[in-house]
Length: 425
Image (cartoon, rainbow, N blue to C red):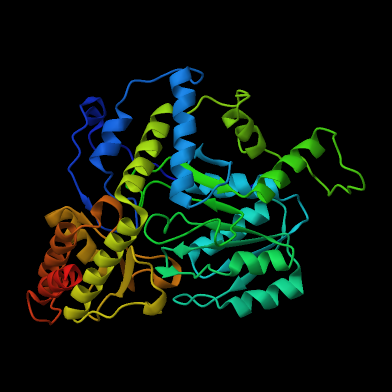
């Protein structure tokens, strides 16, 4: 009989530290996320708790829904915040919308497209993956061919995939999916708040997001919006499970949702006027999610998008001035994350460690075929600011020079600064 070894857990070098006050060395998080939370979000999260049925708390839930309708540019009633990370939201929507055996088309252009595939497989769907080479995105015509051939009920795609730093154009995709009888689910975790995603105008049926990137909050709450068609689909399936089958309905195998916690129809009941208890709301996370959206809406959508675009141009200008090569199809890069090749002769992980240890600045490596070959530098949310970009590029210049990379010292910071000043006119 064979045995399975459990993963190893290293003991604390100094176990007594677990009993001490938290004393975290502050970092400037300039990778693909998470990033530094806006201090106003942290302040909101220090607010005293309320009971989940306190009238103040129920009012705050309604306020949060209204704020995220503005954020997603939608009139969808079912716009709310789920307890859990963005990955939990992806799974909750897919698990609640798709019956085992139904067809899902996944458009994958990076690691998180692979995640959509895995989640759809775990939901029991019949999945077809349309794959684009890493560093590229899809043309609508490619997706249309797959829609004609496969006839899926659901199309799932990331708007931005941080593993490749690419941004998939979505305008026209919702209309295309609907023309072929499919709904569209978009994972916007990596991109929401940094680039437009007007859910109604682009006819997206489900958008799932997270706080920890352009929204400048912590991971652990996931804003979503559902079209009326998606909401009805979820509730129709719920009623079928409860024995209320519409006429001529043929149930698929294994129809019942396997998870209680991930049953989105039950969570929608919780957020509805009926307020049917499902789980105890993560009060502090909801405070944070509300404040993230409030800050975003108060600044104004065009202004936020312009701020992220300006930071992106400055990062790109600085990296190119340092004789570094950008990764992928730059015309379709995300505005909040930039991929750049590790130059020949430089140990990418050693350089990232030097940035962290000597400058308290974090940038990202990448996954799979890009690991060790590409760095990912983010400038998003609270960190999409001139000072953060210049501080990061200045430190990167120092550690690159120490590793023997040849470029004109100061060129990166000067180019980024000039890009910002040009933007200001």
